[in-house]
Image (cartoon, rainbow, N blue to C red; front, top):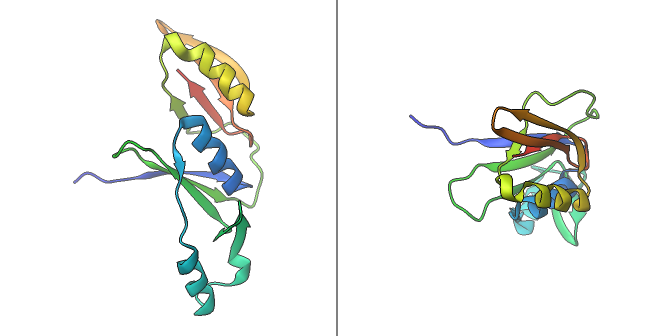
Length: 141
């Protein structure tokens, strides 16, 4: 049996980081149902403290997700973590853009707020390791 999965990213500002990654990948931030959130609060299943406002909309405070316009790609969930990032990620995203477009894409991502960390090469394969605005590493290959 094949499983579906999502990638979860711990962070301090999930809505802002979801916005950043949506822009970086050309994906969209998954809309949250304000009416549902209000019903959950009104029924006592959640509290006002579980919510926040982001870009003028009521959202769940603890997380935001992005989805690809292409079906079948995994959802990426950005969720609040109580501690800051302190060490290198043990798992990361690889943004596969191709050799011909890598430098342009690295420059675009730096312009959006990413940081170039280092460059790597193994045989014919080259990549640039970068960090998103919260320091989560990812590669552009």
